[in-house]
Amino acid sequence: MDLSTTALEPAGAVTTLPGKLGALCGLGFALSLFVGVAMLNTPRKATDQELITWWSDGTHRTTAIVSMELFVVAGLCFLAFLSALRSTLLAAEGGTGQLTALVGAAGVVFVAMLFVAAAARGLIAFAVESPANGEPLPGPDTLRYAPQIGYTITGTGGMAAAALTMAGVSWLTVKTAAFGQWLAWVGAAATAIVVIASALLSGVFAIPALSVWALATSVALWRRASRPS
Image (cartoon, rainbow, N blue to C red; front, side, top):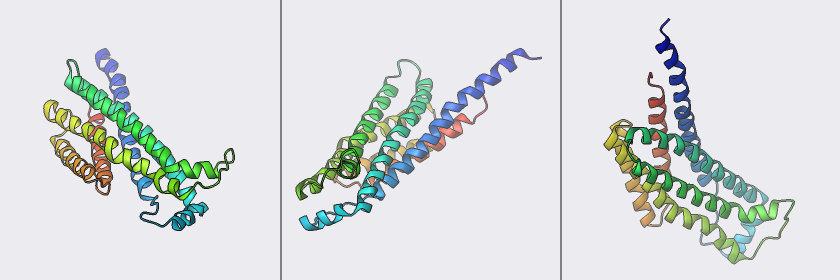
């Protein structure tokens, strides 16, 4: 019996599991974020009466709560995805891992802002629908501007942190060959789209670009975890 081979096989099997779980969480993040954004479309440039009518609809309030919960799921999935990504990059970078640490910190900031955006999306609906609260609808000014907190924090600081994460992963991919060079090109393109969209105060292209990058990185993580030890 070859004891060295026997000893190595279980270790190899264990080390592939976090990478594959991280890849699945990256997929979960992309889907949760995209659906959470797409399903809720609060009225824009509406009159006070139109806002009150929209928020008086229980279906719309339920949609806002589900959107909030999907944002929370997206944030939790991104943390698990980021953990697997950080471990892979740290092993590839070696040394002090300063750039990997920056990627991790930027990703955590992004998740924190995503949670704030989640609260802003569901705040009004949760206050009205929750049996423990049962609050009446607020005035039209609150109905108009409370959801804007989520749009603002996601479109500015949140997307800036996400862009820094993607740029750092792309640079480390070029520097260390942790993943295929195709991922660096995808990351560079996604980062450019997110930065430009944030500068133009438009999230129409930023969210899809971030989702595509997360899906591409999940594929890269899965393929790396599937390599023979």
